[in-house]
Image 1 (cartoon, rainbow, N blue to C red):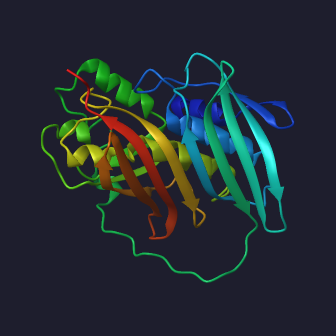
Image 2 (cartoon, rainbow, N blue to C red; image 1 turned 90 degrees about the vertical axis):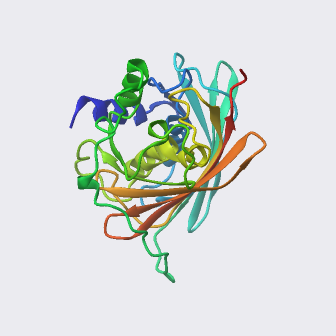
Length: 290
């Protein structure tokens, strides 16, 4: 396991301050604030550590309230809303400098048999045939931008099926994007569908979900500065067990943008065609004032 992945795992290994209070730190991001996927993943870790291990997460709903300060610790307070026979509900508030910056509700369920169906997995190229994120960076990208992109995603092997937004500036495209991803290293004995794998997928889910909004307008995104934006809310449903250290296809699209906001929705599939996760997010997407 490389240093970058170990650093990410350390980031998700929160300090337990009291029974229902946890503390986390941050890492550098593409923009000068805490990466939203980090806060969501850490909040889910906090919630999950108050729930029996035989009740995996099946959904989360979250709101980003204020920008996070990457130089200060984040305190996560867990409210044990309900412990039922089948379902457990937790509410988490993330606080910095005395103010809430993030709010998450998460639900966990014991395993049970039931009716099953799913969409068919969309066509996608073999991830092993695609360039890595570092290899796919345009040569004319400013060195500082390239460095920040590589550093922010160093723990994850993330491969675009088509050109990412910053490689197609000025050329509007269909609001649809596909990426394959997995952690840059194996995760040892952690079971598929365990809290660790779910939290890692939560972390990655915020990296590219609004790409399809940018593609529709030929914008390169936050990395190149032709839009400004931030996540507003984030929802995920975990349908089937998966491993974050094995290839996962993230198929994403944007049905709408307007009013300074853009909506992204995505589905995460295992390489053998099982629908593992559904994700929906709305974010601020604004053109900078000249």
